Length: 73
Image 1 (cartoon, rainbow, N blue to C red):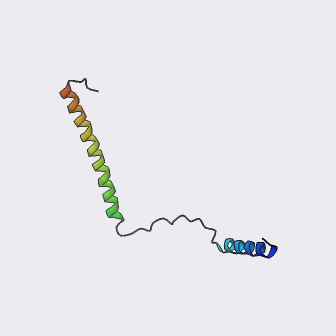
Image 2: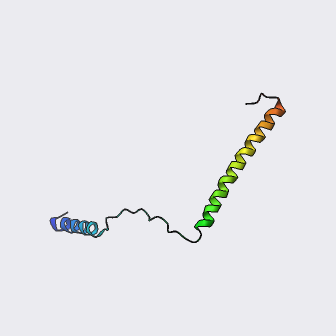
Image 3: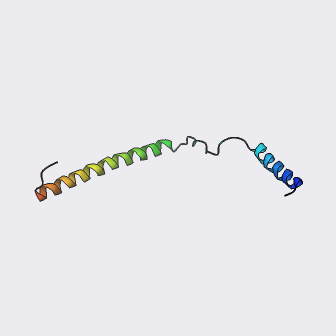
């Protein structure tokens, strides 16, 4: 590359860097909406369902162990 081509490429890069906002590309946090209370209730319900499922699984395992005659844990 010759000197004018190098200068043109350098100026183009500097122009692009100079015009950037300098902020990170991370998205801003979501705004609060009228649906926030509903989504909070859904998350709470999912947590409760997960707890119920875990308890049911533990109970199933305990029943299976008793049916086989295994010692209780």
